[in-house]
Structure formats: structure tokens, C-alpha cells
Image (cartoon, rainbow, N blue to C red):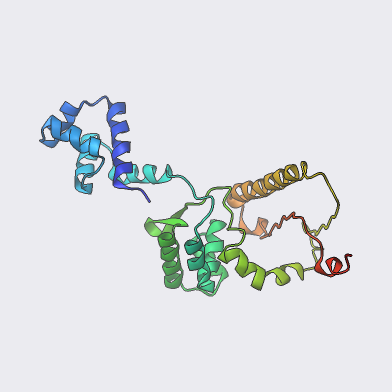
Length: 243
């Protein structure tokens, strides 16, 4: 979420770009130049004052706030508390997964038995949690980085381990664009991280393709779930046979 200090910093850049002096701004605001300098240096002022400065610069306050929000760092991982809030309600988790795929409100309510009012309520919860920033007309901005992942042992991954893993692997993996590969081997410990890097690139390619294909009609898209994993592991039943 954008803070007042973020907005003030953006205003300083706009002042510089407009080549407006503190004296010019002070005159426009009906304030002493020293007061304007002190106010901007402090980085804290009422929103009404920020709006007045925007008018002096011929800027739209809403547009400035939107640009500042868009420049905020994206989340690569959520906190334990944020994830706990997401899995506390199964329908909220569903809407969270949908917004990760950047579905619209209409797409969500068309695909699932959720009323528009309920879905808007869940979007508002995701806004409070920090996954999205709600915007007018129930649009939203996703606040997660392209490299975002759920915490490896956090509430969401634990939920899927407990409730979805067997369901996922029970599939035949024999449809178009499907497959299940299980490869076991002993490789150099020094090289193992390089395989993980390649897997991460595959995951990023998949995420970027998802973004690019949102311009296609729904009839030309299919929902897929890509699962990549690699760990030092031995099947428990085999381990019990070890000497």
C-alpha cells in the first residue's frame, strides 16, 4: 500500500520534472517558501495538501496514486499470517487462486457458484491481506511478483499436501499436453542446484506464457497445473529395508 511519504517523494520528482521552484509552489499554495520546504522534507502532509500540490502541477491525484502504487515492490512470498488468512476459508482460497491467474470478477462468478456480492467480499479480503489492490469497478492489481511462491512449509502448501496431493496424482496424465515423469539418479551435489535453476526457469516460462495467453479467448485456453519437484529422498518403504 502506498504511504503518504511515497506520494510526497513522487511529488518531489514531479516538481523537478516540471522545473517548478519551491518559491513558485509556495506562491501557488499561498504558503511561505520555508514552510513548503519543511513540509516536503518531512515527507508527511494531509492528503488535501497533496491534492493541492497536484493541482498546482496540473496532475491528477488519482493517477499519481496509481503510479506510486504500481511502483511498489511486488511480494515474492507472503507471511505466515497472510497465508493462514487465505486458507481459513475454502472459498477465499479459491478466489485467491483465481486472482493469481488474473481472472475477472465475471469469470470467477461464471465458473463457480459464488454470487457477485460474495466474490466482491472475497476480493476485499484479499485486498486487506495484501494479495491484490482493489480498484474501481471491481478491477484489481495483483501485488505478487512473477517469482512469487507459497511458503514451502507454510499454511497454503500444507493445505494442498493434506487435501489436494492425492487428488492431483490420481489423474492419468495421459491427456493432450499432460505427462508425469519420475526420474531417479545419483548426481554430483555440486551440480544439483543447477537442475533446480533450470526447473525454476521452466516454472517462470510457464507463468509468462500464462500471462501472454490471457489475450486469447477462453475456448483456446485450458487450465493446467505444473508441478516441479526435486529433493534428496528415498521412498520410506525402501529406507526401511536399508542395513
